[in-house]
Length: 301
Ligand code: SF4
Image 1 (cartoon, rainbow, N blue to C red):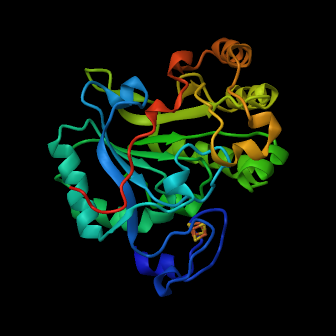
Image 2: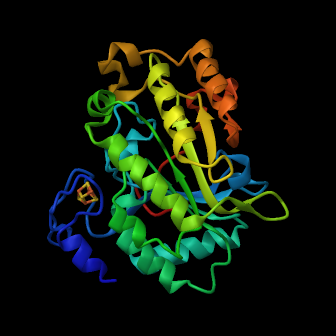
C-alpha cells in the first residue's frame, strides 16, 4: 500500500474530499499528512471485555470525519489539539503501550490516519502480540476498511443515527446510516463472530455502540430493529450507552440541551434486551463528564 498516494487525493472516508493532504491541503477532518494524537495511555473506560483489568492501550487521534455537535472530545476532534508523530514514533507508541501491559491497542477516531496506522502496524508485525481495536464513529468507506483486513482484530463502531435528518442536523452527514450500516456488515465479515480468551477479553469481533440521545428514542428503536433484522444474535455484540451530556454545539439544538432521561434509556434498553444480542448496558451513574481524559498538545512521553 502506498500511503502517500492515498493521502494525495484523500477519499479515505465518505466525505470524499479529494484533497492533497501531502501538500498541506486539509479536508473536512482537518488532518494533515502526519499522524496527530493527543494522548496514548492505559484507559479503563471501554467495555469490560476490552478494558479488562489492566486497561486498553488507547491512542486518541486528533481530527475527525464526523465532528458531531455533541462530541465530548471536541478539543481534539474539532479543535485539533494534539502533537504530530512519524509512523516510526507511532509504532514505538504501540510498543510502549504493550510494555505497559495494555490488553490491546485501542485506536480512537483513527479513520483519517488509516494509511499511516497500517504502516506503523506493519513495522511492529510479529512484535505486537495483542489485539488491535478500531474504535470509530461508524462513518467508514469500504476501501479503507479493506486495508484493515488481517490487521485489525476488533471493531468498536458507533451506530449513531437511523434518520438522515438527524445525522444531517447533528453531524452534517445525511448519508450516515447508509454508510455506517454497510460498514458494520463489512466489519463483521472481516472479524467473524466474537472470540474471547480465557480471561474474557475480546480477541476478535465487533461491538456496535449506540448512544441514546435526548428525544432520540424512536430513532434508537429503528437502529435496534435494523440490527436484529440483519445480524445473527451471536454474530456481533451491542453496547448501549447512556452518557450523553450536553457540551459544545449541542446547546445549539434545544432538544439536545439536557441529559438523556432514565425513561428514554430504559425504553431503548428494553427493546435491545428483547433482541437477544449479547452486550452491555452502561450504568446511568457513569453518565457524566468525569470520563474525559486529559489531552496534550506536545509529546509528553
Ligand atoms: S479523511 Fe479527511 S480529508 Fe480524507 S476524505 Fe475523510 S474528511 Fe476528507
